[in-house]
View (cartoon, rainbow, N blue to C red):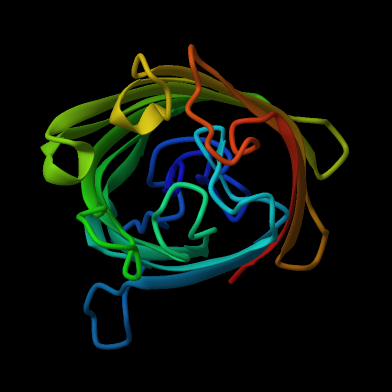
Length: 257
């Protein structure tokens, strides 16, 4: 459940697990910039790895309060198209999805001046879940606007009716804000999201998730550090294990290549 392969990049290697919708991990390739030696249009391959103190998906802890190992590979294609895959360890007892999540996604991303856009589709796969159908498909889209050191992104994700969602649909809308602190590698981040549907873990199928944090890249290295306070609110939260909807601090150590 990558949360913005998303423009927060889901962002990048941070716990966009902690945040929201898919597609910023993909690297957009300008065909004019990527040309191979024989005159053909090239592609761009990138990868990311991370260790997070908890894997949060839209505020919900899917790793049972334990450390999660995450990583992905992205292929930037001509004209802004991309394909990618991302995986994370999860706790098989928390919500019954098994101990591994595998996401496969594809879409298109581009920029128009200070405005960026990203649309695509993602498949969430749980290869070792228990009996039943847990895999599902979700469509996503986002718009971002950059102004000086600040960037604001708004996005939606929609999972249509499917058996793994109890033959119901799920709608998610979110906003992410990042503000770079001038003269430093530090970015202040904020997130607010609203879920209506099966993936809320509430009795009334509604939940609000939020986070605020700091991210920083280590100069001269591909390494990034992050810390975020993450939470989720909703009526009658279903919490059989007692903790996976509690507020928590998520620490991230990641690298991208």
